[in-house]
Length: 159
Image 1: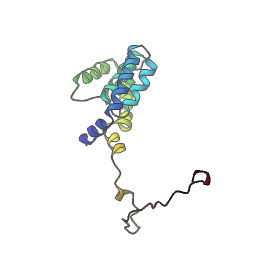
Image 2 (image 1 turned 90 degrees about the horizontal axis):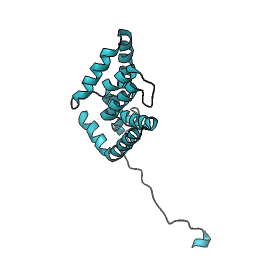
Image 3 (image 1 turned 90 degrees about the vertical axis):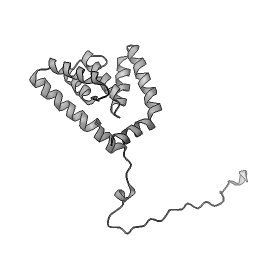
Image 4 (image 1 turned 45 degrees about the horizontal axis):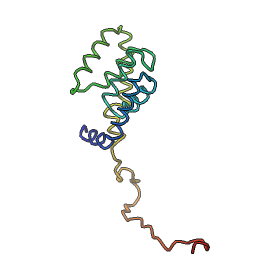
C-alpha cells in the first residue's frame, strides 16, 4: 500500500515540489494566507511536511486563528518514522491541552485521518478495475470499440 502511495507521489513530484517551494516562499514573505492555502492543498494529498507546517501555523496563529486542537490534529496526521521531530512536537502540544481539549483534538485528528490519511489517499488514487465497474448481471462483452474515420468533410471554400 505504501509503495503505491510513494509511486503516486513520485508521479506528481514535479508539481508537488514546485507548489511546496511556492508555499515556502509565501511563508518566508509572511504571506501566511497564501502559504496556508498552498500547504493545505499539499497536505490533503498526503504531503507530511505540509501537514506538519499546517500544524505549526495553527500553533502560531499564522494565516489562520491560533488553535492548539487543530495544531494537534494536523501534527498527528503528519506522523512518520522518518521525522521523529513531528512526534516530539505532537507530545509538546498534547501537554498544553486540557482533558476536554485533548478529546476534541483527537476527534479532529480522526476526522483528518479519515479524510486525508494514507488509507483515504490510497483509495482515491488507486486505479479502478474495469471488472469492478462492469454490471455483474450483464453478459461479458470484451470487444473493442473502434472509431472509423472517413475522409473529412471540408467546406466548399476550403476544397
